[in-house]
Image (tube, rainbow, N blue to C red):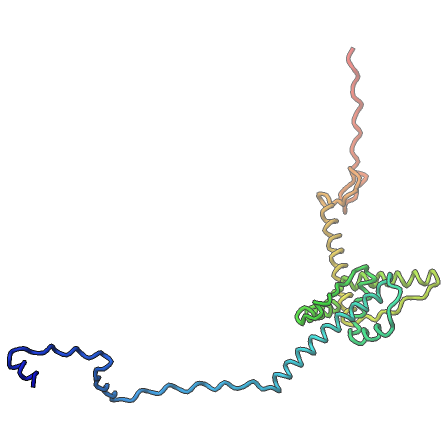
Amino acid sequence: MLKTLIRFAGFAPPAPPPRPPSARRVAPARKPAVAPVAPPPAPVVPVEDPLEARRAWAKQIHAQQVGRRFAEAVVILNRKADPNVAFVDDGDLAWAQNVVPEDVQTYLRIRAYASLQTRTLGDDARGDLQRSSAYRADLHRSAATDFEVWTTGLAAYDRAVATAARHGEPAPAPVVVPTAVEEGIAKLAADKARRLTEAAARRAGGNAGAGGTPAGTPPGAPPTGTTKKDDDEEPTPDAPAGPKR
């Protein structure tokens, strides 16, 4: 009643404050005409086969053990080939001979006869798969292709056999050279002989004088391939006249 009388008297009440934004009513958004495309499903990543992973792990461990055993066996064989080493255990030697192939064993002996020291791997390097595998491959390759060392070592071995026979001492153990290595040594010797022959021919050709006269021919001698006839003798010159008085 009071509000009505006040409104008739010309007095209007203040306007109510606006509603806060959170209290306003918002019309619902219109739905799109086309439904959104659903994203593709995530790709299915196959789970690693545990059996295959175990096989790969076992293969890696086996390769690592092969490299380590080979490097350790080379150390024992080097000690056996070293004339300054007095004792090598027979059990260790038999184990090393079963690990290292026979051609590599012979190559190690030949290097010792040639007074060449074979590089060995330390304990840390033996456990490294990459380094031990490279070391093993390098020794196999050298044993099959290092014909210079084979030639030098076999010559030293022959001298050792001759020295032992001359002194009445036991001869060194025989050396079995692989067939491929023997062929390589023969080819290397043939190449050396050919180069020596060619070098000698070049030296002989360079020492020849003009007209084909070999070096060392005494002066005044006729050129090679000619003979001096009796009719070609030069006249003896007259004696010079004495001084005028």
